[in-house]
Length: 492
View: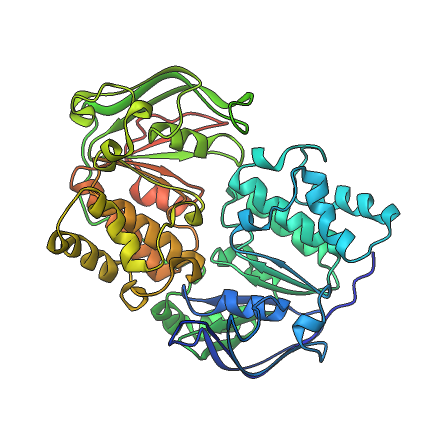
């Protein structure tokens, strides 16, 4: 399969989303020669995803936003060059189209008119390349977030595009899976033009020809990776860009000693989910022993598909255990009974908060400020009390300028900070966070980690489902690895 690389040219290009005062990208001049590999960096909200969507021709028309300047792929408007570009979105859940894995990967090929004899050969090769070896008939509804990410990438690789655009392609992958997917991309994209947005800078930098850094409506840096990181380290760090080998953040707060009575404990626990309706139960993980303690952080780690998110939802009282025991103790239950899955939503509000892996699954309103107020208003707080909770969170997580914006139009990193803030607004005794640092730049990562640590220091029990080793090293008091070795009580 021979790839014909595409060239990209931007001349004074800018885009402003409908309903926004601020331009997402403004006055951009950029030339990407055919066949070049570009690592596109910038702080959360700098316009990286907008630029990728522009190159792919999927930003929409004048009803969706306003455009200035020119953005061309092979000298044509991107919307007229579809099929030349393949885009993997930041949210892989939004790219799942069909019910079976094989059909989903084949979908784009069919739309591009690839000969039938070639489609399934491409499908099998793409699935193998990204390490999604579950069979063509595997239901897409039974994939984890990381597996959906691999599926979306396989669908794009099967297209054999001349321009491959990847928005955080390894964000929800375990470390070994991230390396596997990166290597698959580099092999499959050989000959194509490649543009990657990624906060795991060290994973990609040495394999790329060029680094382009977007700032606040300007180009901060552009050049060979080694030159950019050496010459602009101070500017990049100030802008929130991840710089390879930067010193990790460490908590300034003292840790609580082990030994406190757990708020929630489980023995021989099995967790799973049912299909549509009351379909067959699929057990994701079993024989688990878990203790969640006030003022301590439990990190749940392990490979994609091991059942981490299912465990998180079970601990949060959103799914019944498949087997074993899971009980809340009186300090958390407060007379409601020991089984969180039997509590009503209002009863969960101040007891257990949950942040889903996919932010879109819990966005409810049309404004960021209103989103933060949902929980406090459900607790029937008055306007002054609601504002006292919402305003500090807007400032702490850099959401103030977005207070009147529709949450669904935020970047992935901004949506993640919003959902974390919304969970904190009800001040629960226990907080379950599924990939809390997904999509964060270096600055917002530190601010989010510091806020989570402050909440833990105040006595909240934390469960952190994460592939972020830096977060585990910085915050975890205990680690439970699913699909590998369990490390209970790994005090630091």
